[in-house]
Image (cartoon, rainbow, N blue to C red; front, side):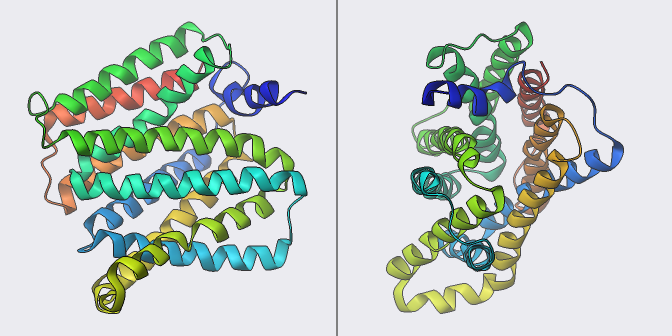
Length: 302
């Protein structure tokens, strides 16, 4: 199988017609919704940290620790998995930096839905333009609906002025990075056991933000960490749990509805922003977020 066809089979097929369409039971639905809530929660923790770089650094500590334990248990991956691990790690660290920038520049309830909603839309477009895949009518409709919802999120409160454009650009670029590392991982995981692959990813990715924080904050870092220590470490654990719960759910039900349910984190993110971060939710943002989720459901449930 060529690299081109492997990418199409491992990454794009789940967005097209190749995924199972059987339903999932109530327990799996509850688990995936819980994972979506955890994902939105750790993002809210990172956004709400007094010093966001420090918050992201704290979240990286559990990833480093769990990655090191996983590497000790699972050992080295096959040689042909290394390029994917390295490239994915670079892309993921870039995603983290872009996410950090979007949270520093904009409101959580706007940047989080834009970042999360962009990724499946970009993957769907790439499947047609670069990989020569055909989209079903539901997937085509999903791309259009996601685009409409994203436009709604961007234009809430009027036409974006120059002060809002950097935050929106960073959030969109974050979504593109999500699509990029998802594509690489979709191929890379075919070359190594999933736990081995994930362990090395965590070990490579985890230290990046803590090291950047050490360089940027210097001697002030310990003092900056104290107020956010429990929340930051808890956010890292929440992120790991969210991944683990979805991984378990994918062994118990059809992938497409699980993927669609996972994107309800967009709605949880908007609600958390309103309830805990003092951001206005509003009917317009609620409708736009719901439209994005509806489009993602259409893309995944063909």
